[in-house]
Image 1: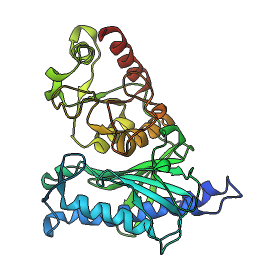
Image 2 (image 1 turned 180 degrees about the vertical axis):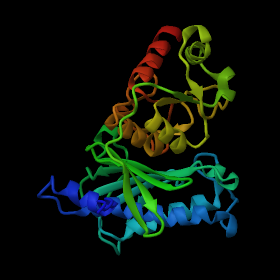
Image 3 (image 1 turned 180 degrees about the horizontal axis):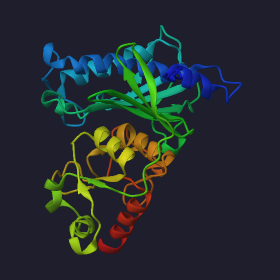
Length: 336
C-alpha cells in the first residue's frame, strides 16, 4: 500500500513537536497564510471569467498601477489575519501605512508583512504571479504593534515564504528548519509536500534580469553580464526572465541560478533600486540562506540591512552563493 502524502498541516504539527513549550500560534499563523493562498489562488485561476481582472485606475505607494487582484489579495491577507489574535500588526506593499489590528480584536505576538500579489501586471497574459510573506516576533512594548515591529532587519525573521500561482499552486516556506515546498491538490483542497528540504543546486544554469535596463546600469553590472555572455569565458548560462520576482526566484531555487535587479538611472525617483526590502528582498533572502544560497544588495547581505522606511527599496542579487559573492567582487572592483 503506498504511503499517504504529507499535508501542510501534518508537516506543521510535526515541526511543532520540536518546541514542546510552543503555544501553537505560530503554526496556526502559517496555516492562516496557506488559507489565504487557497483563496487568492482560486481568484487568480478564474480571473478571466470574472470582473476582477485589469486596473483599478489608482496608483499605489510604489507609484505602480493598482490591479483589481492586488486589492483583492491585500484584503484577503489582512481580513484573514486581523481577527485571530495571533498578529499584532501587519505591513503590505500595497498600503502606505502600517495595518493595525482593530481594537475589537485581541493582538498577538507576531508581525506579518506581505506583498499580496507579486507580478500582478502579468495576470491578464496568464503568466505566473505570487504572494510573498514574512513573519517577525513582536518587539515593541505594550499590547498592540507599532511601526518598530515592522522595521526589523531580515535576520530577525522567524519565518518567510512565498506562493506561486501558476500551472499549479506552490507554497514554499522556511522557519529556520530548511526550505520546504508544497503543491495544492485542488481535488482535496490540501497542500501536499512535494519538495522537502530544498537546496539550490551548486551548478548554476540560469541568470534572470531585465536586460532592457543594461544601458542604465553601473559599469560593474554591465561587465558582469558581458562576461557571463562571452563564449570565451565558457559560463554556459541560459537567460530566463519572467518579470515576476517570485516566479524567477522559484525557478532558480529549484534549478540553480541567480536573479539580479540592480539599481539603475532609468527612474531617478528610485535611485536605490526597484524592489522592496521588507516585502520582497528580505523574505526571499531568508529562504535563499536556508537553501544554501545568498542574497546581497551588492555590498552587504540583505538580511543585515536595518530598515528605516516601510517601503524602502534595494538592489537585489539573489541565488547561488558563489555567484552572488562574485557580483559583490565585481561591484567592489569596477565601481571605483
